[in-house]
Amino acid sequence: MRKIDKIIIHCSATREGQDIPVETIRKWHIDGRGWSDIGYHFYVELDGTIKKGRDIQKIGAHCSGNNRSSIGICYCGGVESDGKTPKDTRTEQQKESLLSVLKTLKAMFPEASIYSHNEFANKACPSFNATNEYKAL
Image (tube, rainbow, N blue to C red; front, top):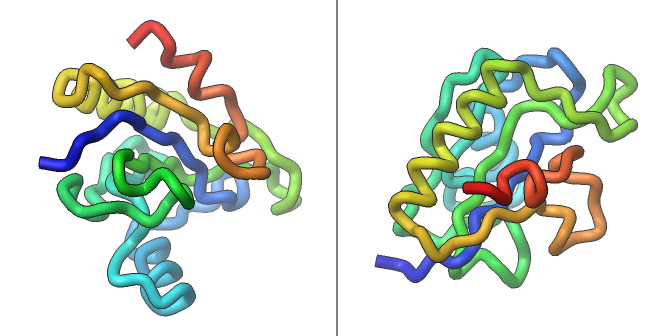
């Protein structure tokens, strides 16, 4: 089993309310970037459905320099309808699902800390302060 010390939260950087299924993200990563699979381990769709990405035993492709010891979770959304301005666009269902998957992962990997992607990259992603929001987990 991989040693996991980070759980990193991402957004898909897609427009608020734009329903982008996991299959589309997977296609962007495989066809557009040449990766073997979607970069994230979990993806949360607008309706809160948690979709499996890469197997958690496989190293992700979601946070340069931190993939080996982390799990990546992405929610659909993250920018306003203009397609540019960062915004926390999570639906109530997405918030509930993120909390649920994070609780499960923390039970599996109690030593792992939860981070926002922007703590490792010069990006707005995930467009909210995940580190602060989930610090009590």
